[in-house]
Length: 111
Image (cartoon, rainbow, N blue to C red; front, side, top):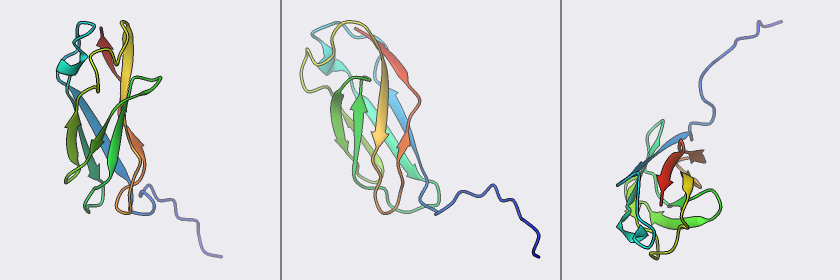
């Protein structure tokens, strides 16, 4: 019988990491288009990252980014896209042939 070997290696070679940056932590209501969401998606084991990243306020999509070399940015589609309040903003990368699904840590935006 062969001994069991435990490995901490990631499986499949398709893992990715997503990071999100906001241009500001606070924005005045009806001025949401001044916000810029920037995303970087990296395939852990290399390879080109393509596809889309979706920015969400936890309830709905705020904007979608078409990635170029794993990077991109977007602004809300209107100045009333996000109602007044505090939000945990997330970026979600749906994956492609070279990278799998991943989420960012949440960031807070106050309107």
